[in-house]
Amino acid sequence: MKRNTYVIGDIHGALRALKQLMERVNPLKNDKLIFLGDYVDGWSESAQVIEYLIQLQKEYECIFIKGNHDAWCEKWLENRLPDEMWLKNSGSSTVMSYSFVPEQEKEQHLAFLRNTKMYETDGQNRLFIHAGYTSMHGPSHETYSTNYYWDRTLWEMAVCMDKRVAKDSKLYPKRLLLYKEIFIGHTPTLHYDIDVPMQGCNIWNIDTGAGFSGKLTAMNIDNKEFWQSDTCESLYPAEKGRNK
Image (spheres, rainbow, N blue to C red):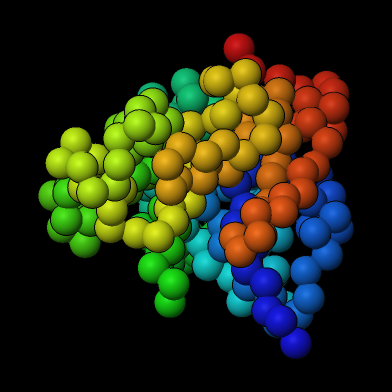
């Protein structure tokens, strides 16, 4: 039986979108799920998203990548001192979602976040990372590990690359030659007025703005077929999510 691998974009506390998306994808038990990070901050069910993902890995092989919002949440769960910048960037909704979560469950969520990966590669030289990397030698040579979930230069470079520049040209960015394909989240495609996955060179951006007014997306990494939830603002009509 053929095994499919699906990559899932930024969730941002939208449990309803995640459940709906899973129903639409309907993965088989031997399929693989790769989540690109930012599980929390936005809609009102961040803690519930983490719990759902913990349970999901009991049924499927799952890879969980760390996003910048997850790193903020992890630090908060470690010492309960919220970062002020995090609170201004929807961290307050995550704090609220944990209001009635037992301490034991919080510890389980902390363990989950600590175990998320900075990046993952597969046997076909494909990279899965939340944001990017700056080293021309690849993420394993990155000086600052925070770039894995904060960098936007990799995507911005790829999306504006002149298509006339050949791969064997000295002008072609060395960072893009390291992998067959790269799958990222972090920068919502809504910033470009697009609500479906975007491609720039060999990079696929799967963050279709679920934290804002967009949808949550899953993509089959082999044939590029994708599925989406309804817009998260329609699933949470009484909330604003990350919208100002």
